Image (tube, rainbow, N blue to C red; front, side, top):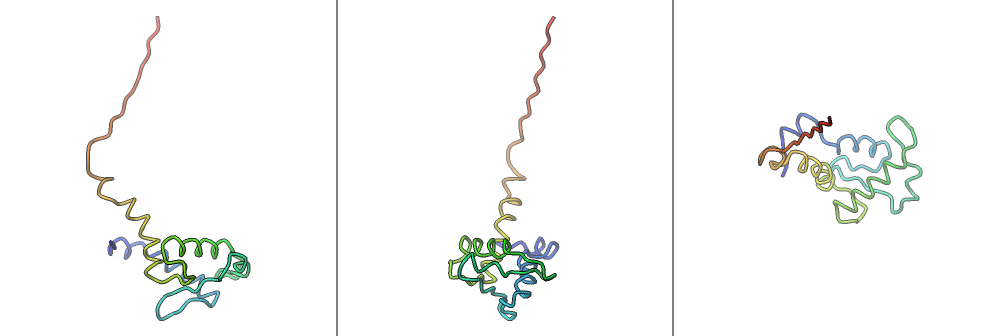
Length: 112
């Protein structure tokens, strides 16, 4: 379930990733898909938009695509949104705002 107001106010994590993927020349501008390397060892040449080396970014994209996608090495826009929305679904779920009150206990010991 998408939360349009939340996405509109904060942007999508996929938009940030799109800049990095564009710097590496692997992002399809029309569909938003990111074609990832075939193995973790090929992530060594991954760079950021500022030309800084960033292999961990590539590694985490690969793991995110495997977890939230179908594992084919193409991180589609739908898979990117699913990955970024999973945190929002847990953080802003109705159960966190409605329900029974919390119980807090204080203790005190008095010795004479």
